[in-house]
Amino acid sequence: EAQVTQNPRYLITVTGKKLTVTCSQNMNHEYMSWYRQDPGLGLRQIYYSMNVEVTDKGDVPEGYKVSRKEKRNFPLILESPSPNQTSLYFCASSWDPPTFYNSPLHFGNGTRLTVT
Amino acid sequence: KNEVEQSPQNLTAQEGEFITINCSYSVGISALHWLQQHPGGGIVSLFMLSSGKKKHGRLIATINIQEKHSSLHITASHPRDSAVYICAALYSGGGADGLTFGKGTHLIIQP
Image (cartoon, rainbow over all chains, first blue to last red; front, side, top):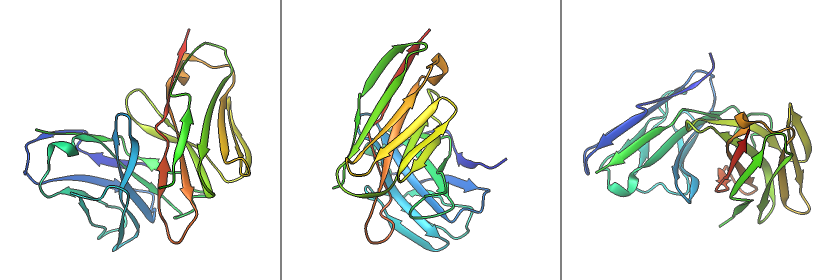
């Protein structure tokens, strides 16, 4: 089954403790992206990747890192999480950046992160 | 900063009603997406369009490039259509700038 898999679904951690949220897709998509969703603000892009070893900042990259060593995986790394990074995070992938004309975005199920 | 405005923010309707959700964007775009977020949080892509109209089952999406406006219509609405509907615009420009999202329309269809 074609899917984007995010793990974990729920994560509670403390300020400053490094964490990684994994994202993997099995559709051989070139484009992958991370978003955070906060009440009243909607979805905001954190980082995106056009292909292996190609990543770029989105609208809210501060406090996050990503890597794209393999096409299928695009982990989101929080080196020193802070409470303002408490949010719902989504990974997504697509065939055809940047226009997406013929390629829908496929989303993971989300990761709800709480930083205390 | 390019913006995407959705209206209404919240909409409650009775089963069977015709639903319209609106999306306006501030400058030229190259594509627009409509997404559906289920109560459990998962997001699925409904439509991508750059011109005209697309239909899938009871859902219809239209876009008017000159007026910088898109609409999502649901015919014969059903309680299972209850969800948050999000439009996202891909703005033209150098390189892949990513998507700008509206804040979503929370739709409740009552039986």
